[in-house]
Length: 244
Figure 1: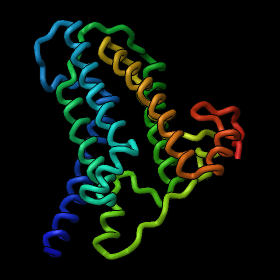
Figure 2 (figure 1 turned 180 degrees about the vertical axis):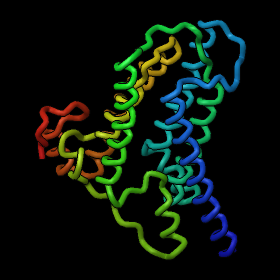
Figure 3 (figure 1 turned 30 degrees about the vertical axis):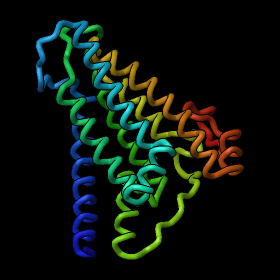
């Protein structure tokens, strides 16, 4: 039985790691290139936009629902809290890949940057990716896939508690990764109707998610986080100089 649990644990780690990398790479290419039209359902423009909105809502529901306290408590009672992060990563990767595969492209181009403006937007896209890396490194030790708790359990080690970080871009804003996510969504030189829909829906979801996460962080860290809230803006920096 112990051997089976060990194999299962490492299998979950492997699946979560592969799905996370595959889905993030696919998302990066999708945002850079636009829809690949992998699954053409032969809808008209209105039908395509409605279907794309449904796909987005499906991802939002899965992503936001699985990080809520109620779901975490239910999962902890069912299989153990150590598996939440990895299962969240697996579910998110699967739904995100489904969104990318089934996304319906609309033909009408609403805006297309040309010349130097196009190259500037493309350059900004990669600068934002560098910003993501900066933010992730500032959270070290950072475990975005939720694999460390399972590995610690298999090795008989206790997981370290989550710590409040004030390094890197977190000295300017409380949610720099969300800020970079919004920027990269809009960093496209070609805006079709389906891309404009994606930009607005996903930006609104990210902002709503930031507010929901604020409640959880304030509950977890208490007075320390509320002090951080008072001093540091949520998404938009106050100035070029860091607040902290």
